[in-house]
Image 1 (cartoon, rainbow, N blue to C red):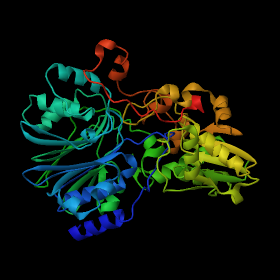
Image 2: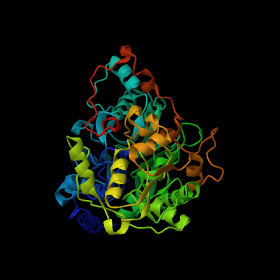
Image 3: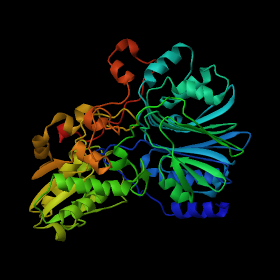
Image 4: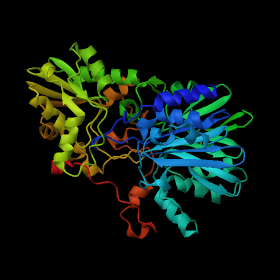
Length: 514
């Protein structure tokens, strides 16, 4: 793609952008992060900025891009959206070179602030080393404690920096071998894009929990968290990076694939199908939009309802609601209209302000729902507070009955693989059975898709095989596919880290206080 084409698309994408992406109120599972990399691209930083724009839904707290001009690594990082930091030609001009990597972030470990914004960069004995990471290392605190004890000095509170120190202290001769050596010590989930003076390395954890795809644009090779990023920059998707695969690309265009971590049964995150990925992406060989429609169809088969209308909770409930309506034969209607120009409501200081924020963001289509029996379709219930307010909104608009259907099983367990979930005690499904949950959200009926039904909807004809699940579904089942070293040791005071991690934002509505 010519430089002028990239710059024109950047202008089109960012020209009038305010906040078009999901601005949740703390009652959704927050996206992990998104990564993008380009090598042998004439305008690598511009392509990276455009790719990150397509991945903005995966992280809206901060963004960073690092480029390499053949001699030096140059980084630009900032808090906020991609458009707020990389919309101008001047910003892109500060990042010369034909290799670049970028990252959009919502903090899952560490805290907010520029020191944790990726890509992280370090000068190693072998030269510059920049890394962008989507995922979460579940033994990062244990590794960090050991490294600090041996003299390592950390500059951030991000778990990603542990990988840098492990690479720096490895005694293997090449950077690729050092990275392999480092990742053998790591537990959890990661999709990595790494830049070195000799080229780019992309790597996915052995279970493939976090997504990573590979594409091509002319002579350049690209990597991204989702295929939609390739659509936006005008690239062709080649394939998914395989679980446990490490791909090396040099400046001569040579591509080398390694599988250094053995063969394990993949366990990609099933919530990518439910919520995280954009519906116009492909994940685990399937159209995300098609999978979400199929989930809605399966939900209708399992939990039919005597109703007049199927109404999605926008925007994430729309594809499943279409599937539910088509399977059930009920009309699909936009009974809730959402404003895309309302900021985050979870930062409001009081329950009344948060409630007003929800009403500003969602408004009932009164003429449509008054006197009708409504089936509301949403992707998940986390704390339950937003679900309760949506049901209340429908009743205030005159709905005769409000039935709630959920396009995922009950979220009863926390995620330790790169998704910022509330602690388990604040998950509604961890505290209540189905009937108390229904009473809490004040619906006439409540039903979730079954775990077997979810598996069937995304392509497993026999449902979930408990002996060998095809996906990571720990947030529903509690079946974690890797050790959780840090979680197991968190109550051991002797294992405390020699630093005080920032407290997480607690200014979120709690079901107990509702």
